[in-house]
Length: 438
Image 1 (cartoon, rainbow, N blue to C red):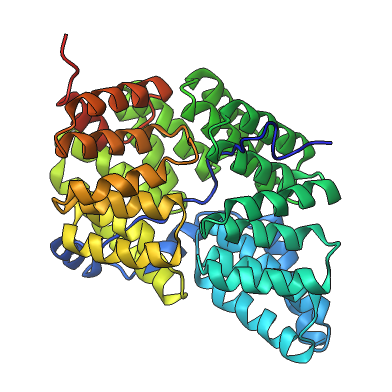
Image 2: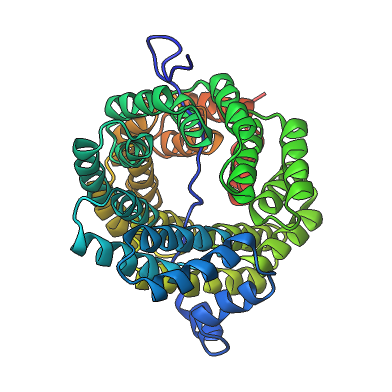
């Protein structure tokens, strides 16, 4: 039996969720909005993608739902397909379509299991974690032996900082059904608790188990690559991304992973080309931010600002679909926008997501706003699980330095470098200005 806890202390992976970074930079946004509407950016990228098996299956279920409006199972399956298309296309416009289907089914049968799971999955995608947990707990009371219900609960519990409860949910899930969904969550928890080796072991099992779609399997393979990169093993990371691209050509998350490896090796032009390809296929904010930071690192300030403007445009789409992106937006504002706006957003996000990521975002926003002394207890809270994340250690080092604790700052910075060379160019450049004494 595979367990979440390998020893009394927990552990977990770097996940998953594709960071939705963003902010509105006024001048850049004015330039961009004058040329193209945000929805057109996504649609243009989507049109360059061939119809996938998910598309074809969705078309079939659209016909079935029209022909059989009382078929609740068909409606729920179509809703799940829309959520999968949102993943594959990077288009949050599918959220509203999925929500309408789940709500219609639940209005007819409030205990319809596929629709409860679908609604919970939608709320997770929108980062509405407290609502997702409520739905998951209700489904668990009705259907205690269904593994997917525990997955909804676990994902919400992690983001709400309920780590012991999340471990219990994932352990129940993997005991019921050891598959890609449960193994990847085991990996998530192990990495969060500092067990990178255990996270890699679990994510390897997730890849081998395979998912219901090729994209699901390749998502897990990319997460495995991310774990290797996070541990500083660039060769294995690159092999994982390359294999993913071989199995699913043009897969944007693998392209972005390869770009991060190139960036860590100082091959910035190759990294830029890879990010540009990823953005052309799926302009997710995290890819666009990374591309902008690459331009900024080599002095292309105007081009960087154009990329940041695109981030603002994309954020409009997520906000229009009721996605809660305050945490991601706060981090973007802290690094590229208005520190005071970042602080307000981070405070609001921390209230709704009081886990280690919420604490990290608020600490960083406080630091960027010139309040590093207030940031110190929060960054300590963010590190309390022992997560081995180079960016987290870098931020802790900069906060310690600004607070006057130079010795601790040097120690944290060396730990960040020892964990992994894969950190954003913006931070790498900042770290170079703060060298340890000979």
